[in-house]
Length: 400
Image 1 (cartoon, one colour):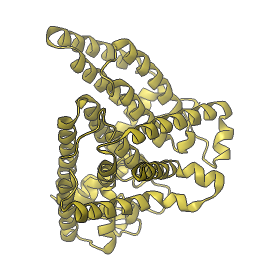
Image 2 (cartoon, one colour):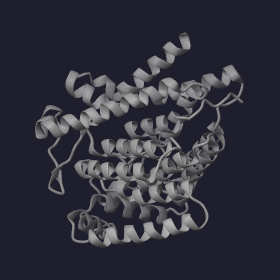
Image 3 (cartoon, helix red, strand yellow):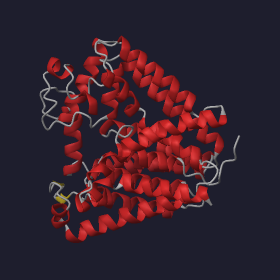
């Protein structure tokens, strides 16, 4: 009974952490904003406690620890090394530590975690519905900027963030498609149409990139032989036609312009500016970067690197909007390889343990794609929600 109570308490804490923005806005409890840092500390403490109780480290921790030591060594060799460097490495590894933490408690019994995820889905749908009904008033009430994209008000939901809301619906979409093997193409088509509508309301374009990949994985899972390749060919023609037909739309033109602006430091495109300078740092300090807590991260605001690059880190520039740029800038090409190793090794572990490999593979691809435009591994909401969905096993995994 005490295990159920503890797990239930943890899930309540998880819900409060994920929806801390709306709790803070409505009730005014500032402390909830620091719950993700508290969970990060709790994750590290639980791993250490697990070691003293079991006399062995949890699954996957050896991989994370190896990368931690490597990142620490890179930072030590970098031009700048401070105490913030160590703290920032923990933040870089936030998703992986959250994953291990949740896995420790829910690996053999994750029913409570599943129902918690269903409750997150309910709150997400309710938040979107209320945002659609009350429109700008919903944003005013939550003290969030009114922003439009493609002529539509950008939805924020109870997440109070278009990016977090968009990622949430992306994960719900993947869960609906791949978690249960008994799905048809009709279900996929209907789910995809609804998903596209939601993305247009939120104003998120990154999620749309994953749709062709979802169809590819779904076909690979469902068919074999000639039928599989015929479906690939048909889908390639269909998506090519859709892309060609959308060339005159605002969303297509804006996406193309952003890609072009990414290659120009004088374009004024913030994400492109951060990415190009990250590449510059990685080349200058090859094969490492400028060091942890020096570029594109929460603890880097006072870094002298920004002055060298002529970047105003204290302005409105979203300096930590891209996880890829942050890793590339701080740890260089070697850092990118280390994080790829962590993500790929995670997929290998889950693929051998469960019967839904395409579900986890789709989540892995989501991390790679979203890391370009979002701080998925460092952001408290995104890292924690990803850690939850990665721990949603179809069947409980027996202890080894």
